[in-house]
Image (cartoon, rainbow, N blue to C red; front, side, top):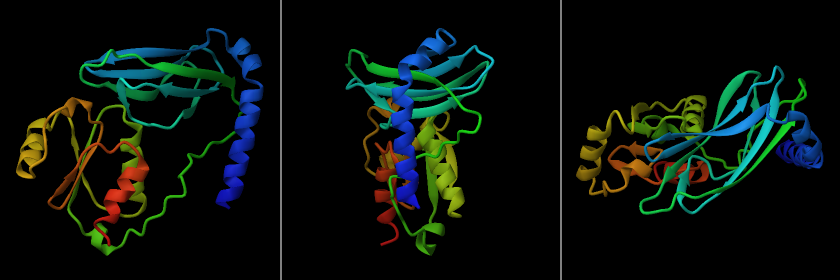
Length: 216
């Protein structure tokens, strides 16, 4: 089933790019990529001022920022709305430059999308379900939302704290664990499992590798 889903998705992408030029001409200035600066965080949004829905594709290439997702973003954009696409966190002493590919296409009302799960599998056994888990999340973090969905789906209990609002608690926990507290503003997600705390996690593959350490 997964192979068929991926094949359908690839076919859709080929179709998506084949009509890209025509679609961009149709959308004109109706859907635009906008930036919102928040300290070191640069939030990227798609703004749709039209009365119909569109699909946008965004790929960002940069060595100056940490991204909330390293994969290209493919999202439907509702009429007269702003939709968050990606969070970029500027790395220390970087110029703050990035390149992007932004494609807009009119969306069929019957079209549905599913995120690629990368065929990553894990057995959420009792060892993990009974563990004391705390996640530190950030604003407009798609990966944070995906993590919460993953845990809820597999009945894994967790406490949620905020990287900014609960920074004092986080710093205390990091120091107690012998972890560095430098460049905390560059983190988008941190997870604490029992007495172990993990930084620098930005995608599902990295998260599952951490979780596997506590069920093996």
